[in-house]
Length: 240
Length: 294
Image (cartoon, rainbow over all chains, first blue to last red; front, side, top):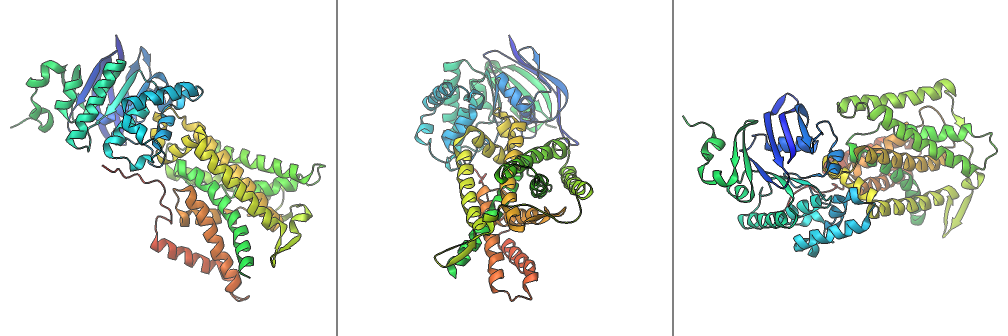
């Protein structure tokens, strides 16, 4: 069953067109990755699904409903949670306060919020240790875990995960991906992943789309493609 | 003498701090200065003036005036900010000025260009004497009320989910929305709280100057703006600190300048402000750090 479907998406920032023509879909329970170099339009695609980037044209459908014109808060309430590229945790709030805000839409049910916080602490034990600490003092890896944990607090159906490896040491990237895999196994969560780190991302994905200069240039099953892809072409363009 | 000075600075500073806090609340979230902010003092003044003949006790009139201030503040959002908020910063700048001018001219046209007396309970002007300090009752009340307001304000921002949501929105508005925090709720709450703080400060201000005229809002706006610039536009602590510093500077000049130069006090005050900004262009408190440590 198609959960999320993007048709003919075009995204602009003023006169600059960041995404030219993007079509793809994600089935329930799948992990799909958008791969591409810097400036390929991956983040813009993701942010426009989340409702914060300006869509010039195209449609976004979620569980059969057209959500193209929905506000970010409405989109979240449908079950689409975002972990943005630079994590965007709230640096002057404590770890626990960040998580509480992640569960904002559950605020009328304090018991549910507390249970979900405990689940997040179970997945990321380091956050429990740091729960009173101001989030801005966490390390990069811990901040990434907090951003993922915060997104999980809304009990999403699909997680939009933007470059979880960005700016992290290789051992930390390894750890973050272990956690994502664990999360997939435990919850059967649908994930849309955006990455530059192709090898790592392919290892946890079912399907993959390649973006170049704002367009999808190819797609396929992650397991088939892992060895065959011409990475050079994707990242550096046609070789003359 | 020193104690007298401290009481004077605290009583003036408490007013300045409340004014500044109200302004920075909206700025923090929208990154836009509400130039119609001073007009809330105008609303307070004329509300009490218009209720003068009524049989209600003064405290009731003051409460109605504060409710009016909250109402007009929310109107500022609906009429001046919301329609153009997403279009351009310049547009909001102009609409907020326009809204201010509209209120001023309404006062000019429907009431009077002349200052009108605002009734105040007489006990506010009585002097009290303690430890060699002589000061009007209203100054003591200002300090006390501000102290209570600040405690409630900080508790609200720290303990309530709406307060947390407002702090989050002030740091990163889009991220807050991506967590399901409704933009309009946060903004309306900010304007309402801004109206409440300006209302309380405006009532205390009125008890000091005791009359109201169409241009009455300019000075409080200027005070709030300068205090937030000194303290740091991105921080609520900065606004409060800036208010007290501005009062300290003002009051110091009141004490040391000779009588015939005193009317030029603002020149000296602004020189100090410029000096502070040369050393700390971002204000004294920088607000939430956004740097990432890896």
